[in-house]
Length: 242
Image (tube, rainbow, N blue to C red; front, side):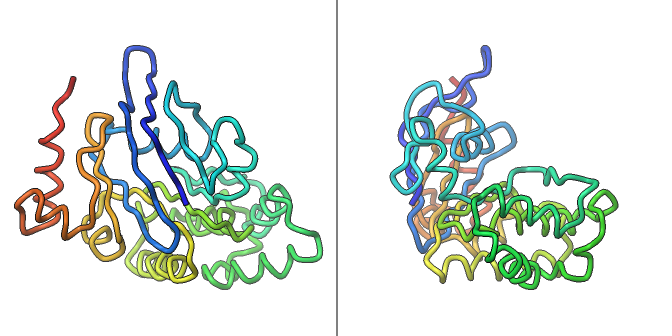
């Protein structure tokens, strides 16, 4: 379970996150929505311990992301915006390297890597260097790295961005499987159809604040809008810049 409690983060004069609070429980998919610059990616980076909040707190399965960052990292698999693969390593080598970093036992690594590559349909290009990969291939390998250690909590920053239709369908099936396995899934997206189809709860952030936090039906009811896209726009309008 992921808990965020009143976090703030500034970059110079830019107050990117202004008291964001929400929770993402196990066995559910929580969507994090907002326009560009709303504070979504900053919030996610705090959760996977790349950034430190100026104030407030966040925890992963009870481990504080600042005070106990190593334990928090052990409980998450993160797909940040941009794959960040090692270009001169093959897909397999990228995944194996992360399996070792995550502390998987040596005698389990090969089988686990094969399983995750089969699940994500990577086997056909597993032994090619990643420098020539398509965007979809890079995303699959980065996702495999995030999941190779079988984390309880999965954080995905716009995972379907740039994927073709078939890759997007495969990704959605995987996200639903993670939910069915009892995992906590938190992901950001700009695709309303994807959010409506997948998310149990939706947190909409605007101007660094939580504008609304509810189910898709709850958000539509509270904003008085029939469609989720219209409800999204209405929720953003509720939060004015300071």
